[in-house]
Length: 290
Image 1 (cartoon, rainbow, N blue to C red):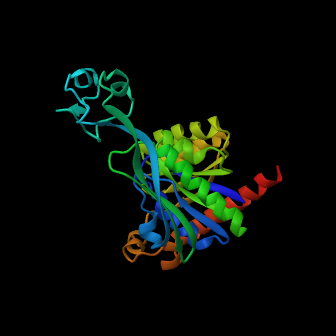
Image 2 (cartoon, helix red, strand yellow; image 1 turned 120 degrees about the vertical axis):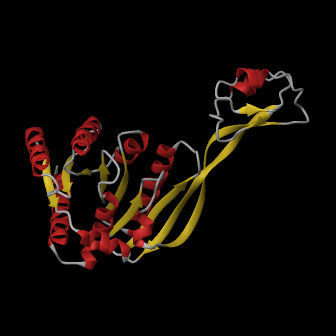
Image 3 (cartoon, one colour; image 1 turned 120 degrees about the horizontal axis):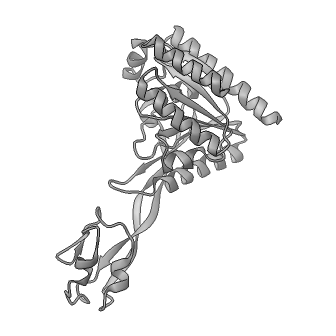
């Protein structure tokens, strides 16, 4: 089984739309949505939820008012201003436990925190593992690891060949968690200055973790000069440009109908996404021979 993760240095590059089309093209795969802070792959694939599991992570302070002497020490020392009128603000508490350590009346306890949920669902394209992080919750990297672990378990138990992951944007902890140990990363960018800048950053993360990467230029015809800059940069860095997807309103039209564009139209966009999947399959095959 091989795992490919679709990443982008910035949001809004069309990453999820491409993953939805790859879901329609690929066979024998598990899908996973690792963008747990803003998961939206399920909006396109319309999954039927089979399992809902709570995700507990971190701890929050809780004050027992029966034990509390209202000495004010916890309020004075909390650098996050999470304690007001001897009540803990759950959205401000960082779970550091300092108030627990200094409370002379031992009125403060650190309790496990319900940070979100993760789901196993079924779609017309195969199983999907996705998650929802709670409001103002952190530890999204840990939840991404949980999603990937379940996706791998499903692939192993069902004898499937691929895991296709919709990764989060940026270069932070969730990206690192979704990238480490993957067989291939596809970096979706667009011909803008911010797209070029963030492509360089996310490619650096891939190289740091030793994950082979290829580039997909989405909306490639919006700016020819910037497209050439991306291609020249990839050529100088020895990174393949796996696909050049043109701008086309047919993509938005397909999304409004709730279907991947490769099932909605057979134009150039679909041809380039099919080319992308062919390149991914070939690169994963070559990776398996090493």
